Length: 115
Image 1 (cartoon, rainbow, N blue to C red):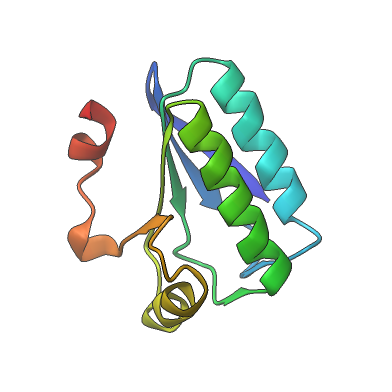
Image 2 (image 1 turned 180 degrees about the vertical axis):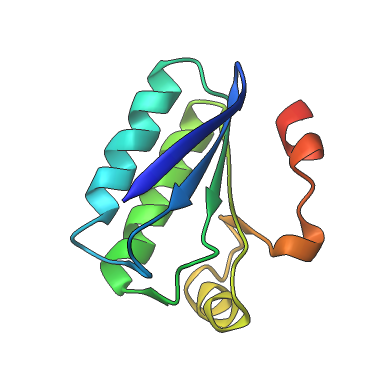
């Protein structure tokens, strides 16, 4: 469901695979995966939402929780390859811009991992 690609010693990309939905069933698996990565000294986590077309309310809550834990652990968390439809939902739910989001055109992985 989630494939982790290590970019360097402290940065990873998590690709959502085998589903086009983030929901209450799979968000906990993602949460546990990110916590495990943070415990292994990961300092940057990029979540690739390229194949995701639906995120339910529990999954949004889960993403906010993951972001909060990342902030507490000095880990940078960003969702990228976010479709326009999902960006609109992020804007409604994530109105304080807590979670960084982007699409292919505005993501520079090299910048992300060097920060």
